Length: 347
Image (cartoon, rainbow, N blue to C red):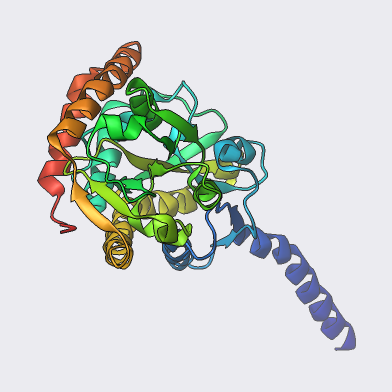
């Protein structure tokens, strides 16, 4: 009897030890990179997304957030490729030349004010025209989404009503298409990631800035230096992002867990981010409006932007044509999707 008892205990312990690796393997922690400050709304929406992933995977997937960004914004995708984090998101202005399809939403005159609609339209357009054309070495693309159209703001008492007004001052801008448009207008520029805007405006390096949204103006502490902002009915520029995971990390996940991430990314995540962007934009506009004046873009300014934007559109059309894609059809599709889906009004 004693030996049977010992045998039972030994077998039970052995089974428990053998099952330990299986239990550990069933729980996967993914380190997700965030480059925005913790006060930025993106933390809230990404935590919500992480909670949904954990719940839908029945606890198998746990997403943790890096205490600080593993790389500056332009280098985030490279850092994730190399394994510094398992996943992250990056502004598409920092993508290399091999993924022009992802830039369709960065074309001028796409965003009509509704970031949920524009986010969904971006994802749908990319899937329809570019997903099977582009390669993303070292990563797996899970989603894309849009922030709001950028305003053009003055730090002086002089309103910006024409291209001449811009040429009289130094302007900070996000890099990419918006900077190219302003460059075509012969505007003196300083460019950089949005997280650097406070340094530029607080030190009086520039007299105007563009490329960030009202909520970002508040979050990045540029509001105290802002006197007025130009508003466009159709945005000459609206920044968007790609949401991705390291390819090796992705390959190690079970098909079931891969499907969880797919189901909760794509259009689902586009709507999540877009709704939050709309909410934050409205709140940011109200807050900034307490100290800054809003003016509509003048006909003169619109004419200058339109003329200067066309070479950027033409260049992009030529680039995606090399991939065998009808870029005009893709751009027309996205614009029509944005118009069809848009319901949110800022003012």
